[in-house]
Length: 331
Image 1 (spheres, rainbow, N blue to C red):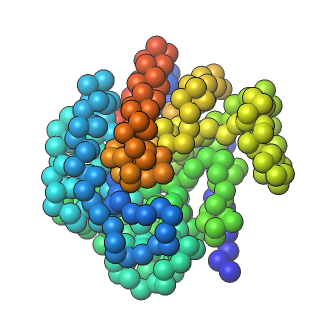
Image 2: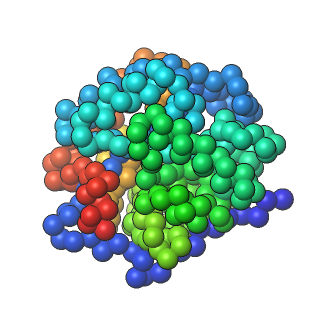
């Protein structure tokens, strides 16, 4: 059985203390990936990349508001001519950037057995994980003219070697940690104790960690992580607590997160002093039928309505977008 990787908690001195002039900011990252059947076992073929054609039109909605996007590109996208051409269009805004996302089951070399545990790249033997990172990084550099400097492990799958491998390859930022989430039941990493504040990690603290923001809302949110864990041991405990307004776990994503709960999560996070809010979604959600979150045209309209409401709130609260350059300079 694969040992569970539990991300080490940052030392107090490793937490980023943003300068006053940074204010409260936000980022949006997109898991820019192939379309596949989310309900089927992992496989090395049978995927598509056609949804990448929708990226420029979707990007325009953000660019019109002055928002840059971090597109975390995986191997099938980086090696598809049409997908690369679509992404090159969005880089013209001068604020967006290409990063890397590793889906090990579709990234060569194919030296590992396909399994749920091995879908978390950090579980792979170190030489295999390193080789896949090299193939992905080289493909991105060939496609876009520069090596990536931000990384997300597909399925948030960091492991004991990953941060060291990233540092050796020149990565500056990791955004693989999903605050308050635990994937150990599937053989993945445990981030249940990770909070929402950015911090330095990796060898000699050379990597800036930007956790995917998750906020506990509800009347019982004080001490929420421990209570949420206990509720998970009760039949429908978490769902009942959420419906009663007692406790809810809300990731900053339009995927499976109702807009009213997301708006409250933004208010709570800002009120609790989180200075950098990190939003995310999957690129295939831009076309109905590719993900469980956007199954038809009506759900795509809801997806964009979610973003309009959230971005309007951020604007009213003077929470501004931040580029990776701005983040690195201020951190």
